[in-house]
Image (tube, rainbow, N blue to C red; front, side, top):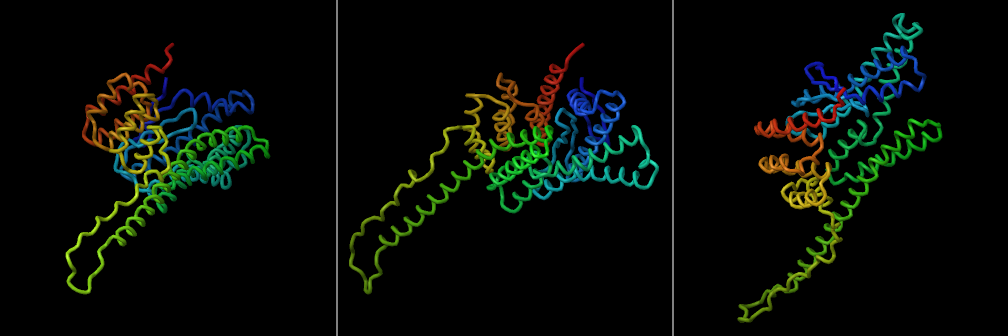
Length: 373
């Protein structure tokens, strides 16, 4: 059963897996109950402060936010607001590590200027653990690897300067950095760091392959378009009637030739409606993305495809279709993140019944997953 409370006005939910993973990481030094209790308190406070940094940044930019502590750490999620700029996303990504560094700095000052620094026993262990959790993990979290905060900050910088056409670069840098981290973990013989790096690499290799394919296709379209334009201009110039020195006699000119069909010069579009729909959606064309995403979700429904379809429907204001999707059997394939997005965006658009329906479905699933005694 999840623990729920509020901090600074933000709802906080602590999942059972957070307790299990925190205790499991602390058990590497032995099953000492006092040590595990201190470690759990350190991790709980550090992760909560980190996510509060993100949540306060959301509030600063006019968003509501909720905090969830789970098996992989924590997440601060927006509950609605205007669209963030790339620069705001940059500061939002840095706010979490920044809050952790502030907490670590406060602990460091107390260690240097008060008797806490000379204390031994569990107090000394708590101080060292707080410094590691906030400085060590904070620096690790700033590596340029998506989905770490450093990866999101790197992505915001690239999008700010280059636009969304360089998503391949975002995941390419993330993949390369994860591989370097994996090699270092092997050299340093750090098993936990190697496993962490391997997970990050797996998360980015598929996205890099997809975005690279999108880049190749876009470059092919651009090259074919340039060749078509050049040939058309050349054909039009050849077929233009010459300027006569005197009033010209009436004569019939052959109609200008149509430019050659360059459709065969385009690279073949991957026959995957999910790929096409997500590519169109990612390039700001939700109207065109709807048809392939509907087909992909109807053929093989999955949480990823459902999230893309719901996003396209929200972007185009098709709230009635979203309501039908929630009521259909396929709605069971919509993930919790998608339901949260539907609820937040629908409420912001004034569609309160739809927002209530999405939240009720989310809560019903959470209750069904909760083990009962």
